[in-house]
Amino acid sequence: MSTTTLAFPTPASLGSIDHYIQSVNRFPLLTAEQEVALGRRLRDYDDLDAARQLVLSHLRLVVAVSRKYLGYGLPQADLIQEGNIGLMKAVRRFDPERGVRLVSFALHWIRAEIHEYILRNWRLVKIATTKAQRKLFFNLRSMKVGPGALTHKQASSIAKDLGVKPEEVFEMETRLSGQDIALEPQPGEEGEAMTPIAYLTDSEAEPAQILERAQTSRNRSDGLHHALSRLDPRSREVIEARWLREDDKATLQDLADQYGVSAERIRQIESKALKIMRGQMGALQ
Image (cartoon, rainbow, N blue to C red; front, side):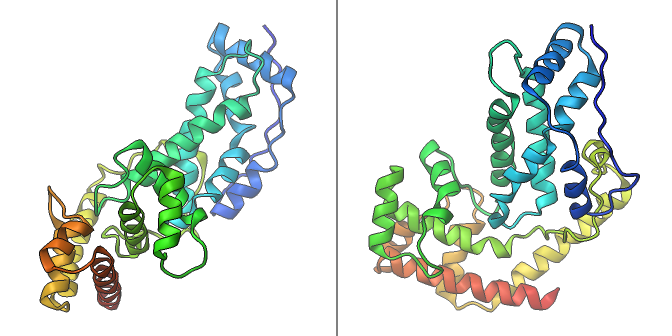
């Protein structure tokens, strides 16, 4: 068994996401022959050093994939972390005898982990429960033309291409535009530690983290009640029916039938209410 180890020049300290990206971009790329040799060492001898070299040489791929998902309001550091988990799963399952480069095989696992992470963090409402809805969730931004609201013609065209209803397109657009009021504050990326070892630490059970989460939960609750109190009765009922019910959340059409207006009108009411709430909750921070 060959024990050749490639040089992966990691700096002593990775103080920010930019430093991390610069570092992984300096890791050497593997040739097809090196990849096969390392894959065989991992498969046949459970060689962890071979696994390490396969992972490190593809970290730049995770960074590149993560950039495509920056529009969902989540820190790139977190997207990279989840993508790295997918990369490690791909390395463990990599078969060097298939004649397929690891980069092609790993793309599926990296994207899958990032997709699951994004969906887990859109907790205000249950979304993307079917394959078609998931496709809509991850393609609507790129298919939308211009910064304004979708027209009926645009929504119908997107719905036809993705195999969903126009109402679902409008609904998803509203939910995507409303992500700014997520009840869990997103930390800024600048200055955050982004070393690979950080991916393996678990601070969830630390007393300081538990107390911080409890205080954050109280602040979110107070801010939400304050923001809701600033809405007119109908807008508040729409927000509560669409976002705050535990089960059986109302659709745009459900509320349109209830108030005797169009689904588009309900969407407009909801969108305006969300903007008001964002402003109120932001003022309290």
